[in-house]
Image 1 (spheres, rainbow over the protein chains, first blue to last red):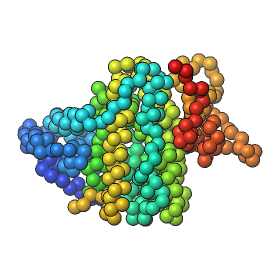
Image 2 (image 1 turned 90 degrees about the vertical axis):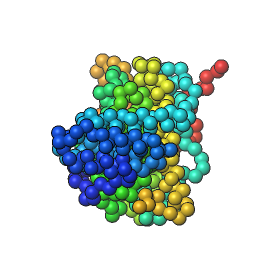
Image 3 (image 1 turned 30 degrees about the vertical axis):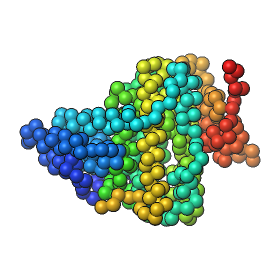
Image 4 (image 1 turned 45 degrees about the horizontal axis):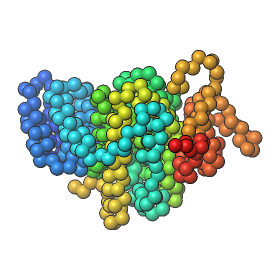
Length: 347
Length: 75
Ligand code: FES
């Protein structure tokens, strides 16, 4: 079985601008051996002063991604000596504040329902209703070439080879029935006691079955900012206790927009001639996420709104932010393909 | 699951509004051909709209046909 997440990446990390350059240099050293990281704080200042759209800012999103991996390992800092460095955390907090500010200003949030379980679930189902019109899932099912299908797996790999981890940050940050619901979902994500059934491990088999490298980080240089933004959004929501409403809403929206597209993804890979070893991941998610979406909408998000009424607005903000950012990512991929281009980052 | 469960029941079946039945606990389902269908997960969703492509399990398609389990509320 492919063990995701513990391999050392085959490629070194490459900076995308002065901010990530500063971070990668710092990570080569030792925290005790340095003065307060003034160059880092200056680099954060400069990056934020320069940024216009954080979601598509290659330097900022890549930097945030690397910072979050300090908590999960597998890319840099093998001994974990930088994880709790105060300067890096302070810089991350400033990047997160700017990212969150942009999201709060742009994410459309629906009218708040009554803070009751059923009403919250109903609002979430309405918000996530399958929409007609062009979609990445339909493109993949009907038209994608072999190269595009592989590209899709590369785009998915930064999150999916570590599937479910960002939402797990929320477990100790929730209490009572919403925690129980989250653990019920996450246990299924992590294989319910069977290592080979972990969704990340099933996805690694898909990646390898499609002739790609399942080593975590193997394609990092190809990943565009918007794809990192989708993952960074979850990490930010999950790691900040004040945003626990948003991570609950995020997971609900994520699960509620999964079953139906996954059927299309499976159809696409079958159309291209792949067998069960490659389609298993998508087939599994049709069934799994039809379960998860019910639990996430009612027992996680709905129950949390009842237990902590002050979080209601953030539950819907998190759900809407998930939909907006993931749609930006999906549109980027589909529009690139429709224009005959690759969706991967151009270097 | 979401409330106290002191009933000691081995299996709990919960209807979710406008969606499937969620089944928690060890069950074996008998398929139409008499073959056992052993769920691969601890919690399963059973289709009750009738159009799932992976029956007896729900595949989320009920959302595409606006499946309703309750009569619309009168207001
Ligand atoms: S109840 Fe979900 S597909 Fe039938």
